[in-house]
Image (cartoon, rainbow, N blue to C red; front, side, top):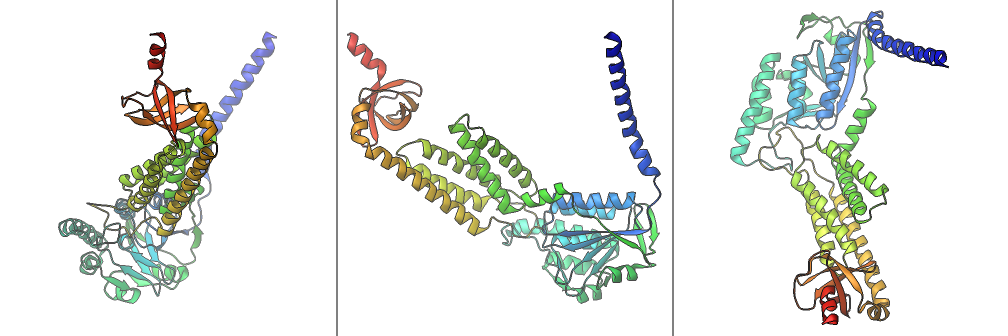
Length: 456
C-alpha cells in the first residue's frame, strides 16, 4: 500500500513538472516560429474615445510590433472623448515603434474634437472623401460653452497640446490650433490644402499605394515604407473590450446603477432571498466599472442610490407616501446629474447624458409601481380594518422607527405608523402596547408602563 502511494505521488510530481515545463516552453516556441510575412495591421476605432479605446490601440501597437507589421492603420470615426484617454493615445502614437496611419473613414466619418488630436498624432494623417476634421473647442459635458475664466485656462492647455503635436509631425500649427481656438472644422480637401492632413485616400488599397516609399519616424528610428503587395490583417476588439464598451454606454450604466441599487435594497429589507442581493451587487460593480470610463458626477450616483433606499422604505413603511415621491424625484435628478460636469471638464468630450426618454420611462415606471403598491397596501388594510382594529388593541409591538412622538412600529408581521400616547420619545427596539387604532395610525404606549400600572 505504501509503495502504491509513493508511485501515485511520483506520478503527480512528474505531471506537475511537465505542466510547468510546458508553460515555460510555450513562449519560447512562440518566438521561435517562422516570421510572419510583411503585413499591415488594421483596426477600427469608432464612438466616444475612452480608456477602453486607449487600451485597444495600445494592444494593437504591441501586436503590430510583435508581428513585425510594416504599418498600423487606425480607421477612425469619432465625435470626441475623454481628454485623459486622448492624451494617452497621443503618447502611444508619438512613441510607437511601428509607423501609424490614422485614416478618417469611411465616407461620412469624422474626426471630431478628440479625433483631431489622434489624427494629427499619427505618422500619416489620411482622410476619405466626404469626411471632416476639427471642432475641438473646449465645452462642458452638457454641450454648453464653459465659463470665461475656465474656458481660457482649458483652451490654452489644449491649444498647447495640439501645437506640440503639429510641431512633432510637421503639420500646420495655426490651422490645427484654430480647431481649438475657434472650433474650426475642415473638409477632406480643405484639410489637405492647409496641411492639416497628408492626403485623401478612397480606400485601404489606395492608402497603401500612396504610402509606398514614404518615410516615417518611429521610436526605433526612421523607416521607409514598402507597402506594395502588403497583406492586410484585421485586429478586432476582444470579448472583454466589447463588453466594457457596451456597459460604458451612459444609458446602460444608468440602468445597471438603478437595478443594482434596487436589488441591494430588496435584499436588505427581505434577508434570505439571496437572488436580488447577488444580482444587485453584480450590477453595482458593473456600473462602477462602466462609470470609470465615463465623466461621472458622483452627486448623481448618490441621488440614484438614495432613490432606491427611499423606494425600499416606501414599501415597508405604511402611510408615508412622501417617501415614494422623494424616490421618483431623486431618481430623475440623479439621472440628470449623472454625467453633468462642473468646473474643470474635458475639452475633447462630446455631450454625454442619459437619454431623456429612458429617464422619463424609468421615473414613470417607479411612480406607477409605487402608486400601485401603496394602493394595494391601503386597500388591504382598509378592507379588514374593523376586525383588525379590535385585534390590535392591547397587542404588543416593537418600535422600528423612533417615536418622537410619531414613528413606526411592528405589530405582528405588519408595520404601522404609530403615535406615542403621552408624546414621549420611545426608542427603536422598545416594546409598546396598542391603545387605539385610528385609520392606519395606531396610538401606543410603553409596554413597561402597562406592567407597572398593573402591579401598583
